[in-house]
Image (cartoon, rainbow over all chains, first blue to last red; front, side, top):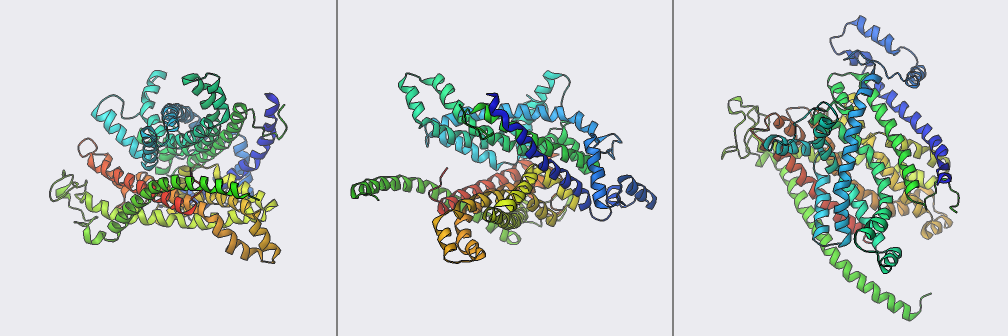
Length: 319
Length: 294
């Protein structure tokens, strides 16, 4: 098992230039602000003195490469700058918000699987029949609905009309968190499921037609054990990498969903920062999210290798 | 070499395959027709907005604010007394135009970069693909929202932001296709025949590799419309008071308990639009690459 994870150091090395690229893009974002970034940050009514002070504080009067290395040096020391609104380190704000967003993503992922596995199985077991058409309809609708609108509709149905869930907020304590996260996670799950269903359905059909499933059937395997041990396990492998790739999309979606449900996560932090023109916070959250996606990419490769004995990203031969 | 018997068996199999394919093609064409009808109607509504919209979409009549649906205002009025139906109709102009136009730049830029990476290969490919990896690290919405913020709200910023984010998908798709095409016999033959690289890429490879990019573009339009609506929701979209579906959903959200239709209907219109575009995309995908079905 372990020898197949030899690819990890190389994969990490491959991620290094990507991470550098990410910092370069995030750095240049501030230079896309029209005119002097300091002026853009302070607004039209800023005094000359305060603009000059901020220009110096941000080092905007230094050459570009020097500014970048200064920025990079700060990041390496875990310093993401200071929020203009809260006057607190952005790193601290991000760390406070991360657990909320991660819980939301985790719950959303679990819910997507709860929705996707039965639907994909139903669709794959009898293609082009009612179950398949239903799954396809769900897929089409799930992709065609704006996520935030789904959130608003769920609030309207399940929080306003039927008072089963709160309209927003995060609650106190783990149990309450779970309860408050239910609707936002469901919203994200509805957006995420179509991709999973499609991939799972296609690979399940492939697996069901394979010879080893025929062999397993001829040896008497049937029903749930056949499905669980032979079909789902093998069909899940390509789906894992699809989920990995789409997790970034899910993160982006959670940004907007957090605003809809007033969850104090990274999304709300970022959206509020946009409204208050708090650029260091916007920059910090963007950087954090992008690095998170790079890390998830590596983790996906690890899980993928562990699940499928045939995959050998190290390029060696499997004994 | 195929023996006559083998050819016959093959022919029979092909005929059987083509019959089941034509059955599926009927369904597929059904989706193409549905897509054409829905998208066609929406485009018609958008074009004819000045003629068919019963009221001015931006003229405020505060004395008629927040009216429920009636004979005069089929979908009621919003908080400024503007007719919701008229705003929906005018919104089609904005959302469809931006959705379609936003796809163009990333389609062209991404395809060109992908084709170069795939065709030239080597160090050029490695460097370009690392750049693609970097852009891929930024989730779509995060990057679009940040870029629109940085560039300032408005239509041009939306085009630029979407282009900056979504060119990578086209680059990846076209690169993969070009790598496959490069090894095909007809390409090798053309090179041996002395054809220049540019001519070969433009005249022979491009027509064969673009279908996947076109198919992706259809689903990309849906994604872009979602992005525009979402930006509108966050207040970063098309500047008010222009009628736009996303901002209509936000405006209605305040009054969701009393005037639910103000939030629900614009959302449903977005859903119908994306259904139509998805069906159209499926149909086009079927026409362009009949043997590559999901």
